[in-house]
Image (cartoon, rainbow, N blue to C red; front, side, top):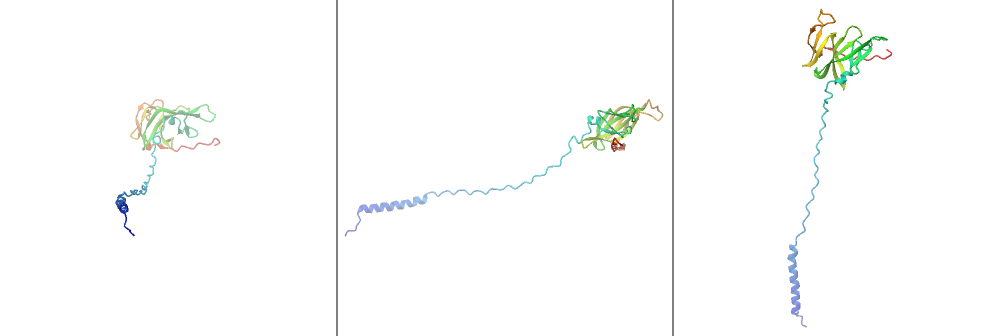
Length: 217
């Protein structure tokens, strides 16, 4: 028997072998899949400590002296009233000079008012005039400061009876009163001497307002 392959079959086998050999380098040159970049782990920012807020600073209002309206409606200590105080309303206070009397004791805030600094804090200096219903008219210097938002009368000094006051000011933590006062031998009606006085508020009489008496007392 003749087993020799025909030329056609031989060429067919050679062609298949060549196709197989050519496919091998092409497969090896195929681009490999691009690996995905690694996902970065989320970073945690360091916690920053929040500073505590600073303590509140005093407001301008708390560092201010009493206003004119507050002075006109403040309570002042008075040696002339039955209760020992004179709670002003719109600049004056009135009460009977004695129980059942038609004569009145009147305490009034004058126009002599000065603002400034006394003993290291804002303050107001005012002059009160009291007419107790007799022949005298008595003038008192009062110092008022702002305490917890309220005007408080903290010091006082008597200026005299029927004196004449020209001006009132606060200079270098002293109260300056330009006034005419009585001399030792002057009549009470007519004080002739003009004598500016410099008053140290620290040497004035310090006050503690007397508690009001109950109506039944």
